[in-house]
Length: 166
Image 1 (cartoon, helix red, strand yellow):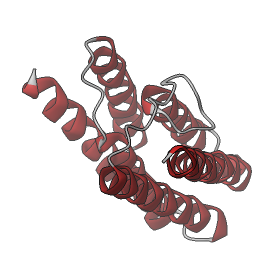
Image 2: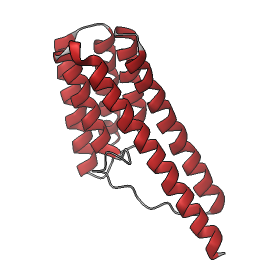
Image 3: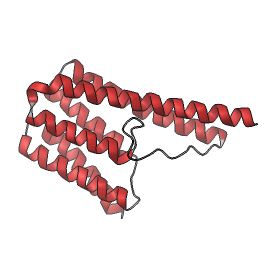
């Protein structure tokens, strides 16, 4: 089963490389492979936390390919999402609190396969319709930022609830 995680990671990173190198047909095929492997891993209960890192690699490849505000905003939102996830895990470990599992189908909570599939579809749309890049990249950045804020709010609520019970 470790092979499935590594193959998902390799497909995602290869898609990022193809996106940065403007190999559009290859990038589309690799994005489809990455999304398929992500769904397969989630069905088998192996959804890892590498999804956010792969989305960050894809956003950085997009920023390399099309520098500007929307691509930079998407990269920044993904960095915030990763930082909030780390801080939430540290806070939960420090207090001994088990955080409630995030709904994997929730885009707002940036949960697992939902966020990966939307990111893959959004990047595929950017390849197919490059003139829509500002709109699509800004929408992806907004969803990602909302997910990070929702995750931080959930963590604060759980931590406050644990403190109030003690």
